[in-house]
Length: 383
Image (cartoon, rainbow, N blue to C red; front, side, top):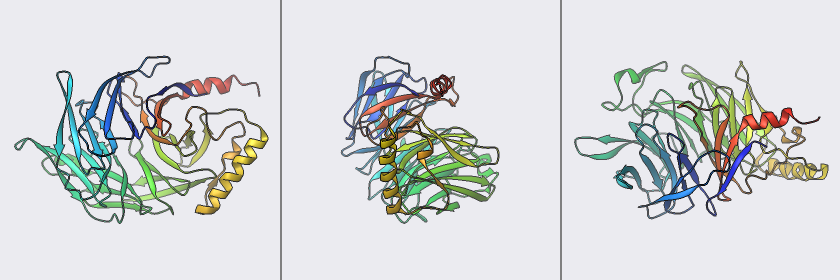
C-alpha cells in the first residue's frame, strides 16, 4: 500500500544512497562497482544509469554521499576506502589510508562532512579526515572495546559522538572528536568535555549480532537491531541511558531509519518494512507492517508457526511483540521479495521527511515508500 514505485536495477543490491537534490541514486550491486543512476523518487519515473565507479578489487560493503560536498565515500572488503569527487563529467577517486588488516564493512559521513567513520572486520573504527598540507585522507583509529566485527556506524547530530554495532552483540557510543578538525565548541557538549576514542555508553541487551544503528534527528535516542529478532531503543539522559527491547515473532531485522523523533521504520529478512511509533514518555511500540495485503487465516497460521520456531531458536526477551496482531498484514510483502538490506531518507526541501524513504533488497530492487499514501489507503478501507 505504501510503496510508491519499485525499480529493478540488479540481481542483488547491498546498499544505496541519494544525492542532495534526489536527482541521482548510487547503489552497490553486490560486487566491486558502484552504479549511479539518474533517478527520481516520483512515481513512474525513468531511471538511467549514467556512471559506473570502478576502483575497488573486492565487494563494496558501504557507501555514503555527502549532501554539502557532493563527495561519495566507499568502503570495501579489499580493506580500502575511496573518496570520489565529480570533476568535469567523471568521478575521480582518492585513496584513504585506513591501515586495516581486515575488510572495511560500513562507512558514514559526519553531519558536517569534515570527516567520516569506517567500521571494519579488524574490530576497530577508523575516523578519517583530510590533511590539506599533505593533500591526502588519513585516519585515527578507535581500537578499544570491540571484540568482533563492527557492522554499522552512525553519527550523532553534534558531529562528535559515534554509535557502533558489532557481532559481539553490543552497541557502543564513542567520542570521535579530533583536535584541529573539530572546533573547540564541538568538544564541549551536553555530555561534558570529550576526548577522542572515549567510550560513553555500552548497551548489551541482545543475544545476537547487532546491526543498523541510527540516531534520531535531535540525537535524544538511538536504535539498533539484533539477529535474535529484536530491536532496541535507547534514550539518552546526559551520561546515562534507558533502553527498551522489543522482540518480534518474526525473522530478524537488518536496518533502521528514524523519520522523526517518534517515528521509525525498520526492515530485514521479513521483506516488509515495519513502522514503530514512540510516545511522549519514550515508550515505543510496533504500529504496522507497511506492505499490507489481505491473506487467508491459513497463511497467518503458517507464518505464526515459522516465527514461533525461529523465536525458540534464538530465545525470547521479556518485551515481546507479535506481528500476528496486524491481522490484515502479509508478513512477506509484495514490494520486496528478499531481505531488505538498507534504508535511505528522502529529504524534502533540505529537511528530513517524516513520510518518504527508500529501501533496497537482495532481490535487486529499489523501492520508494510514502507513508501518506498508506494513511490515505487505510482511511479508505471499509472495515
